[in-house]
Length: 115
Length: 116
Image 1 (cartoon, helix red, strand yellow):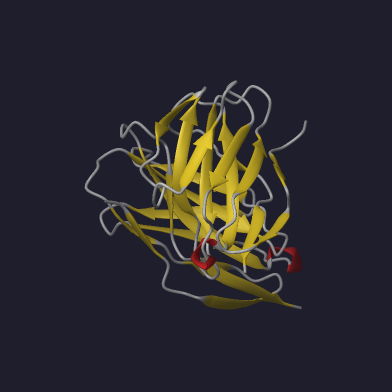
Image 2 (cartoon, helix red, strand yellow; image 1 turned 90 degrees about the horizontal axis):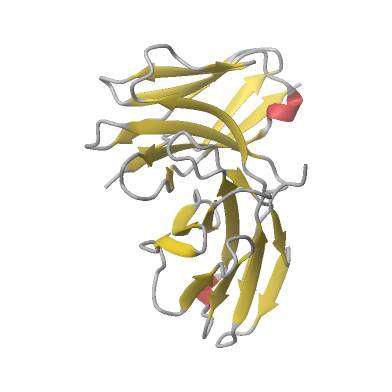
């Protein structure tokens, strides 16, 4: 079946602009995660959705970052007033949502470059 | 807070040989899970193997095995019979159960290069 998809694959934007990154999880997966991976680092957790609600947003770095999942499927990560330090690969993952030992399936990521 | 340490930025292995990638972790929780992911140059994270903190046996998945030493807080990945396609970044990650979220905490990764 189809895996996790993310669009766009690459996004170049100017400092100060607003961007939206989209994630389509595996059908039927109730849990959805966003991670950010900077160059030479492992992914860092941003936010976790269980269904439509953000169950844990403790990883969002500041209030310029926001994410939604209005119908419990597709999620959008929104970044306002982008800064050069926001440049990274943004990874989305989904899992069945049955709890621990849930394998997270990752998408290919969106590479964001802020100039 | 949880922490994962991978002390090997890069490793080389001869094709068909076995290689061990090191991972140590730090947590005060008793219930947790340890994962290994592979990230090829394409960027996608591929799940390899999982070990639960209460699992008595070391996990194995095909050519991958996890050498879990709970007292030492280590969870090393062993890849047997290395293949050229194993060249990639490898990340160790931890999930802490019961925290309301199943977020993964990742290490910085080890770049494995398989030499023909």
